[in-house]
Structures are given as C-alpha cells and as structure tokens.
Image 1 (cartoon, rainbow, N blue to C red):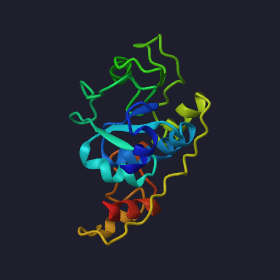
Image 2 (cartoon, one colour):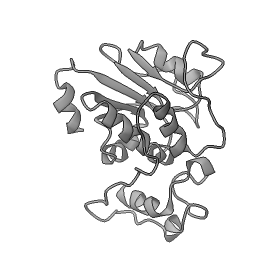
Image 3 (cartoon, rainbow, N blue to C red):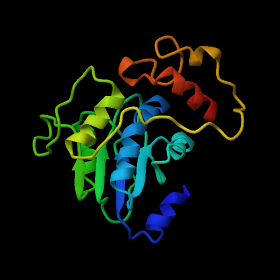
Length: 203
C-alpha cells in the first residue's frame, strides 16, 4: 500500500496499529472507524492487523497504509502479533471488548491505547461496552469517547475498476435482512444492502 511510504518510508515516522483480525464483514463495518482514525492521525502510518486475504479490501477503504497479517479461529483473538521496530505510537482495539485483545496490544507497549472498559483490565479506561449496539456505531462511539469525531455512515467504498471475475449472487444485494453478504450472521455486523453489493463486486 503506497500511501504509507509517504508517511514512514524510513521506519522512523509515527505508527498506529489497529487490531481487527476478523472477517470481511467485520472489516467493512469497521470502515467508518478506520477512516476516523485516518483523519485523526494523518501523519501516522496506519497498520491494520487483520487476515492477509483482506488486504485488497483494506486498501480500498483509503484508511489503511499497510496490513499486518493476523488471524485466529472463529472470532478468537490472535495469540501474537508480528510487530517489529519501536512500539506503536497509537494502538486501537477494534477487535472486541477485551480483555484478551486489550492485553495483546498492551504487550507491544503503545504510547496510547484506545479500548473499551473491561473488568479484566481495570487499569485501562474507556467507554462501556453495549452488547446489542451495531458494530458501526459501537466503534465510532469508542473513538468519540476519546475525542475523535467519527461518522457511522462513512462506509461507502469505490466501485471496482473492472468487473469481478466472480459475479455477486443476486441474493447478496437484496438488503441487510435477507442477503448473504457481509455480516449476515449477526445483526450488529450487517452492512447496508446499498453498500454490500459494491463491496461484493470489488473483491
């Protein structure tokens, strides 16, 4: 991802690590928060810890400079991150409520760590987790608590430059309640139908 080269080509610039080592639907619902972080830290290299196959989608968001491969079974937290060099200046937990994801990032000794509050990590302060909150709203609310403006509606991705070699099934674009697109398994992670079709056609 070439954008990061202009910010930290020699590895000495500030870096921000965002953990969201989940699936495509989870990445897409996290786009508003990722873009808010990009605006809040424009000079930082934005590194997203996520599964390697999601690199094209991450790049299309316009909010990520580099992907750090990270994954675990199901929705579990990775056991380690292959972070090299100095600690991240900013680390953000967009993976879950903690405490495992909090501790994974804390072990890297970031200059600043943005997380939800959790009894298992009482020394880390953040907003309260709300179980039934939509993912788009949840992660934007996390950032707002730290004084970072975020718009849950900022999730539109650009149309692909060429038609997908794997056409999107028509059922994918029927809407958020019936489509087989991103986030269908959980209502809190559903992507609006108007955006899901564009996303499915891109990757």
